[in-house]
Length: 293
Ligand code: GUN
Image (cartoon, rainbow, N blue to C red; front, side, top):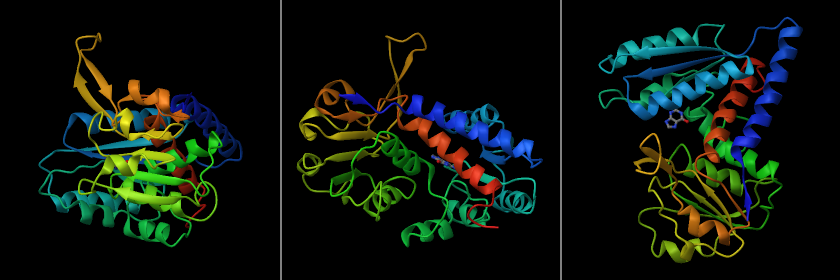
């Protein structure tokens, strides 16, 4: 069994990005600038945004954290987005999801300029992904593709089973694995809560990508010998064994599944850090106007 070490690969990619930023500075260009908006103080979102802001600092990006009260009106939030859309100093804008229920996520995502949509959530970027045109790709699936590339994992003709059909992970992941080229050219099956005999489908997977949001859902009897298993799940549960009193669990029962795999991502230290560097990469592309001017 080999580890798909997202922590290691992401630190290499961060160095590459930091070098690119140094080059930009040397040639008199402004450094990439990411704005992150957070509404309210939901625990997990706070942690994710803090990681993103910290990562910006590590590679020499500028970042702006915009905090809004949980009770902020949709109108005020949209007005702030418009202000950032029009601020030429800011290259990328993300609004951390989920949002409070009185605010329409659909409206918010659509309000972000697709040129600054480094999360790849805007309908224009999602649509362009669908028809294989250059676009910002959602950070988690993009990070997984990068991990597959860096470990030279064969994907052509393989059966890739994706568990989960979210707009952010499952759907774009399926498209990326099925598209022409490398990584891609896989035969893809998407499973979800209504799939019949999900265990049997999983057992046919050469590459199993799990994004169900159900901790330790995938057990050893669901995995083919030699499969590549990629675990997107991350759930915090109480633990008496750790100093903090918490531990993180993936969607895969790691201890029993790992011995059967050719490659597997750990949790934490697998997909999570790759997601962050994807966002940084998208922000670098935005600053360089690689996709849109
Ligand atoms: N919530 C969960 N994942 C993400 C993400 O990648 N971006 C944003 N903006 N919100 C999220």
